[in-house]
Image (cartoon, rainbow, N blue to C red; front, top):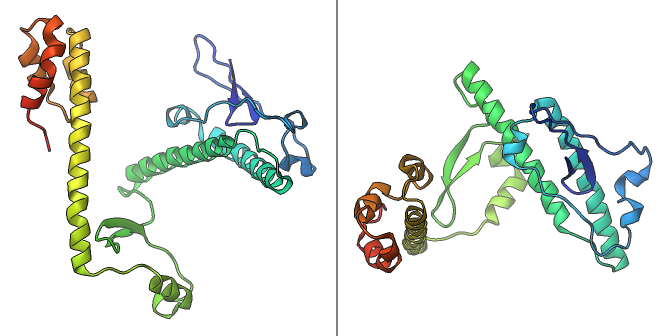
Length: 258
């Protein structure tokens, strides 16, 4: 089974039928500046065949050593793609498949997520703390709370001219403006949640219609915002052929968990 690693680096993933061991093989080392350029066979091409990015669930199966190697493979790939993109803009020609950069960045972000999960688990087991850099909840200029991690400054913030200049350039708002924004923001969030619950309710109804003997506990776990037992009670004695005609009326009568 062969899969392309992120974009330009091929990786041989050998998956035996009775084993979960997987290997990857990268391209040969080139100690010259051609490391920053794509393969010559892709020069001038309008389309380059690429694979998908690495998902989090795939990376969780890899060891720390594999993740460390994969990070530098992706870093080399990102440097190469950025170089080719710059050259394409400089020479005024089309850069094929610009989404390759997004796939590499997504893969690197997923690696950081997996490494952070492992670090949190280790520190929680050993020390009872997450081991991450502490921070505080602060209120931004819109009145929303956001979490900001603490940073180290070689100069105190009160005497740091760059920090004070950056702080002064931030937008400001009055308490009345914050209240005006927060009122409309809460209404928007509530409407979005209602639409999400409605959509999940329709999905639950369709699942119950086509699979009436499905696992109700698994269905409730997948849709925690929907009271699945109420749907089962309402439609267990109804004819499944008439279910679609009754869904709009029954759905409007069901309470929402807001």
